[in-house]
Image (cartoon, rainbow, N blue to C red; front, side, top):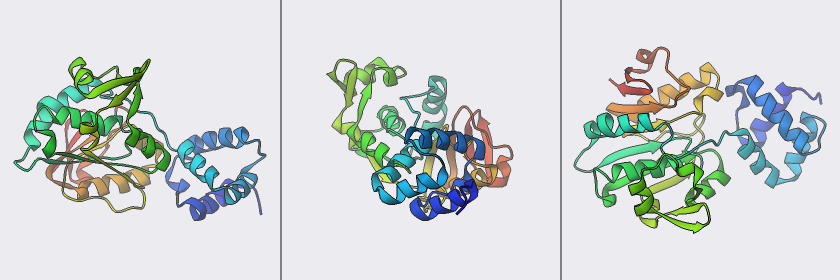
Length: 257
């Protein structure tokens, strides 16, 4: 069998369910080459043989190929806008349905819970958080973070909701953790939740092809209630939001019509 990238993509899809056709090729190839080299292998076919013989290496592959960059309240000015201009318009008597997609280590959904605690009792706060990477979700459920990842968190939240466990390491409180439900989810193939008021998917879509992004935007639109909000990351924008029934209301915030 030839040691080609096309052949590799097909075998990866059969082994893991990950569709590499939906990811930008040059970026994925660079990451793959690094991973193959790190494992002391010569090429794609050697790596496929390794994956077939060692299930732990499949978990390593998914963790390495997904981009798990996250921190609490990343880009604080956008979180300020979310607090002042978005959340008050979405609140209902029964609360608010929120989905944090591609949540990585959990910084984002936990940030959402803390922010929503300004508006609602925690008993009414529920955030659904998903990621394709099973290993990273285990870290999210543990809720242990470095001081560096907390740099954007207001002091009042750190005092109230975090406890230093080791020098420079902090555990988030159980009352915050109870408000988040973590699930494994692939944006490219799994069903989306419905009836959402707010969806956050930040700084991950830049790694997908335009075709894959359009499928995801369409899925988000169907997932949101009328008037619901999609919050994207600094590096992302929807070029033709009207195609997905969205209107841009502020940088990185899109409202479903």
